[in-house]
Amino acid sequence: MRTPVLLLALAIPMSILSPSPVPAQTCTPAWDTAIGDPGMNNRVLSFGVYDEGSGPRLFGAGLFTTAGGVTANRIARWNVSAWSALGTGLNSQTLSLGVFDDGSGSALYAGGGFLTAGGVSASRVARWNGTSWSALGAGLNNNVEAFAVFDDGSGPAIYAGGHFTMSGATSMNYVARWTGSAWAPLGTGMDNPVLALEVFDDGTGPALYAGGLFTMAGGAAASRIAKWNGSAWSAVGGGTSSTVVNAMKAWNYGAGPALFVGGAFTSVGGSVTASNIAKWNGSAWSALGTGTNGSVQALELFNEGSGTQLYVGGLFSTAGGVSASHVARWDGSAWSALGGAFSSGSGVYALKGHDDGTVPALYVGGLFSTLNGQTANNIVRWTGCASDTPALSARGGAVLALLFVAGGVALLRSRRRAISRS
Image 1 (cartoon, rainbow, N blue to C red):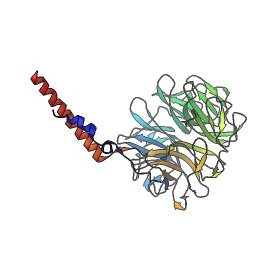
Image 2: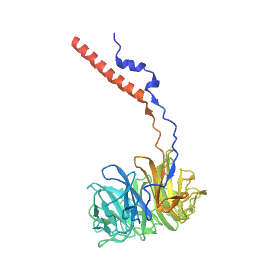
Image 3: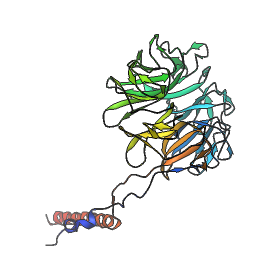
Image 4: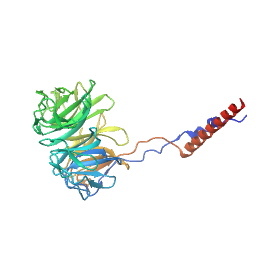
């Protein structure tokens, strides 16, 4: 009796069928200062990643009017090798970027101090759909500093925070929600500007957290940080001491979910010493070592090849006592530097992790002219390494595929013979 080919596959040495070992990681994370030379001609303040239809692309925004030597007014797109403009851009500073689909298709939202976008009237906030700019209702009457997408139970919506107090004739105290046709307030809002927004679940369900310069939220005391549950504002464990919260990032680093908060402050929760950065676990505040010696402006999660870590940008020169020029990383227990030295008077204001198809990288934007003595006009990137993923060897994969095809054919023929004999 002929042995079915499929059974023969079981006798093939496992050395052929088993995945071939992947060579040891030889990549070393490093700085890249030539990201679209000659960079931007003024500071970069925000990044976003948006897919216009040809794959996710990185967008940068700020005060610049040229990017990579090309005219690009306050916003530009990176396409792996060069920067390009989004129409005629925006007529004044762009401070924040967000992505949201309000039902009419995914779009890139831009906020700042501008009054026109692509030549269209758009007061401080506008939407780019991949081909053109459009306004969002009556807009807002002052700078927009932050965006977040949050579902309060009635469906996801995009929220904005900033220095504004009105949308048209409607009172809008520093924070607002886009309904799809108009801006709506969140209760009575705050008593001072909102500079950061982040969604975080402390164990009681997702909520929208706001940080900034305020001391009141919804009419109640809330020092620089507050929580919106969809219907009311509440304080967050005593908040932070003066002066400001600039950035927030939710991250579960293995010890449970936490909200990381950066800005310019010396304590949190009223009594916990924390220098410019701290974490909230839903019930208590704690410091991240000795923190930083200058303000924190941006927070981002990025995996450079050895696991996700929290990257911190700002106006500091040390983090946890370690020399770190404006950028540092926190792995959940300790600080480390990236080995970069930015030019004197520099500041990092924006961080974004993105893989453009060539390399995973942390994009770093701000106000600087050199990094480690190399020209770097307001934008650089920290290039990481691709993850090690075992792959089936070409020989083993081919043999395995052929054997299963042949085995299937043999079983089919065997079944047909059995049917014909019956």
